[in-house]
Amino acid sequence: MFEQVKTIIEQYIDCRGVELTPETGLLTELNINSLDLVELVCAFEVAFDIEVPEKDIRKFSKVKDIMAYLEKSR
Image (cartoon, rainbow, N blue to C red; front, side, top):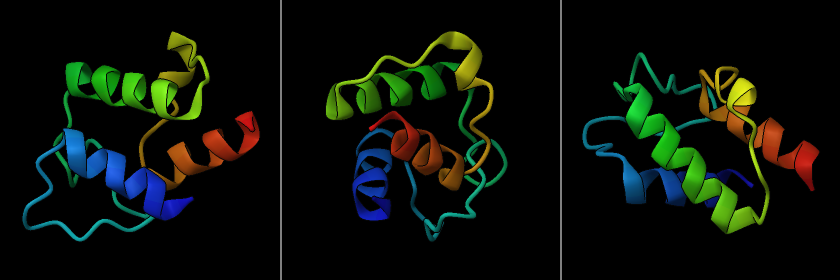
């Protein structure tokens, strides 16, 4: 799961200089703004054929939060 999530993040976010791990902070370490986060979530929705309600997007602060959400949605 981590490799899939990492690949999608790298496609949409400039990750140069940051080693992506499950503990990587989306807002703190990757400096993702709210628009970037929405675009990233859209990419996960397409890749995993799910729909993420807006209220759930606020729960994503680290890479592991996305992974846990995707695991739960399977």
